[in-house]
Length: 222
Image 1 (tube, rainbow, N blue to C red):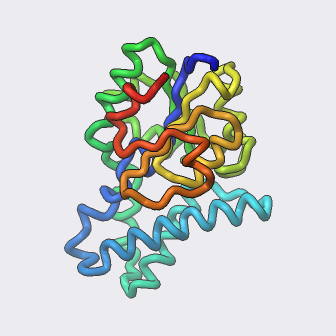
Image 2 (cartoon, rainbow, N blue to C red):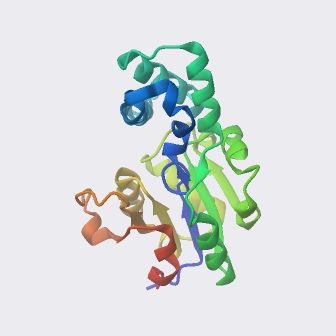
């Protein structure tokens, strides 16, 4: 088996905690906070998949705003000012506590590191601008370059092309099972972060290494 020479990470829900988009506004959202986040994420992903299937790409920032508008309206929290501050928080998500240490451990092993994300270049730049680990990344790749969303194979090909490596030499880390499944089908060496202990799907029992935290990745690499 080929040695892994680089590791690509998903951003949203993998390196960065989506809960940090709503946590600062829990008082305004009240008992709807968790429901708003769940609906927001559900619709965000649904809109990316339907856009790809219809060949009607709209960038991730637009999709995210539309998904938030739906979630707030569905939970009777429609409010332009609230939507604005929630989007601002989404643009400045907090990384998981073990993200930086994990990236540093991988970099110390001589691996090339990158992000492969649905986010726009501007969104990713904002996410990373205050993070000390940004300097560890060799590439930050947005689906904007091919104008289609994950799990379309063209996105994963973009990652392979950017690194100049065959898929079997690239590790791919995602906290999203559907993304992990797409990456495994493409040929990446996949590490699925199953933080919530969800049932295994998309054939990941056979096609991926399942972990519960980012901190487990260095030891899991062959």
